[in-house]
Image (cartoon, rainbow, N blue to C red; front, side, top):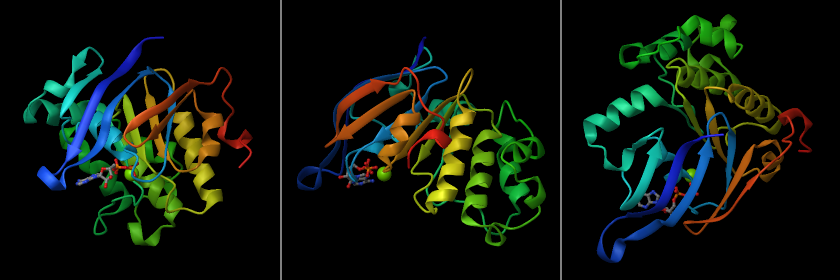
Length: 233
Ligand SMILES: Nc1ncnc2c1ncn2[C@@H]1O[C@H](COP(=O)(O)OP(=O)(O)O)[C@@H](O)[C@H]1O
Ligand SMILES: [Mg+2]
């Protein structure tokens, strides 16, 4: 398999002088194309920082982030903006849907900035939301809102789907359905990276990256990952 992401010796700090805190203290790992990757670690260990840097949101202090063949750590603002538009789908813990737009309108919103726009109706069908597309977010359950957010991320047809604690606000049963959906989205042309607190998900990952105090504690590959449904939650 070929690496689609090479995260090399990344240092990232926030703030200046006495307020400077190091979120990443030299973190390295690789991700292969099509993998379902799970990032585990305690709160404050640097998980979101890793995802944000891969997603082209913010810059590292030093190190290289090679995505495909390109070192995005050297990108200027315009290049990063294009990179995000063409390559990245992002899913957040609290969905971040626009409350005054319908589900379909939320998903269709990115049409303007998408080179590979997949069509809102098609993607809403894939996440099982066809019957709810004319509703507003407040009329949906948490799990349905997260499906809508996943549809919005997928409608750009991004090669990288980055999910930061996507089940953090859901009950465990609904969370499992969402994680199953995300696992099924990985493979072939799409790489999915999920940050979670739930270490049981490790059994379903192709690769597990454990983060601690801004460093990579371990990277392990699963020869035979379970399906999310098979995991002993
Ligand atoms: N925008 C920011 N400004 C200042 N400190 C930050 C910022 N984002 C993250 N941090 C700090 O960096 C460290 C790692 O944060 P984060 O990557 O969000 O960890 P995690 O997602 O694992 O909880 C924490 O100490 C956090 O307080
Ligand atoms: Mg976080």
